[in-house]
Amino acid sequence: MTSKMLMFHVPQDQQLLAALGEVTLRHEHLNHILKMTIKSIARLTPAEAVDATQYDSSRTLRERIRKLARQKLGEGEPLLKLQALLARAGRLTEQRNVLTHGLWAKELDGDPGVMGAPGELRPLPSVDELKSLSKEIEALTEELNLARLEGFLKIALEEKSY
Image (cartoon, rainbow, N blue to C red; front, side, top):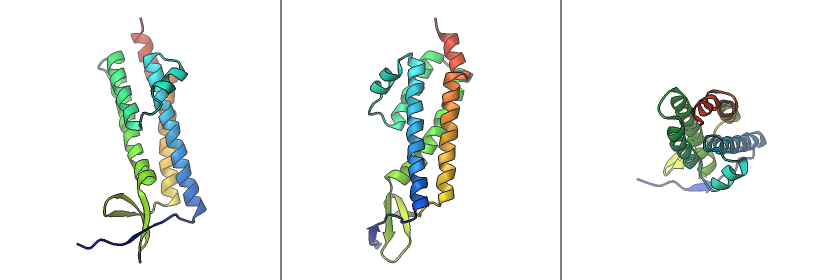
């Protein structure tokens, strides 16, 4: 088994870099709404929620929401709907992580790609693929925010309040 020589690679395509930047920004919006979901479930102020989750990863935020929601909501439709949203968030975060934490590189005489796992150099994403991922993240962020502000999560939390 021979290892191939890799060189670091930064694409010069400004549209590609802009689309990657948008994915990163949209993902941070999702993380913020995860923090605000913790705020809503735990009945915290926004500042308390941000302080309490300051260094939490996306995975930690999702796990905390699951735990708090199970305690506050109990088993049932609202918990299952929330868990479905969190599962989608997890899948989108994984896609984003490969792009932002993977090694953007180029084989010595080959095409550039993104290395997510050792020895696995995937082709660079297209601008359209990045824009699609960004839109998926944006849509999920809006759906989760709507659920906590006026949708099923808000209603379920109001029913469980004493």
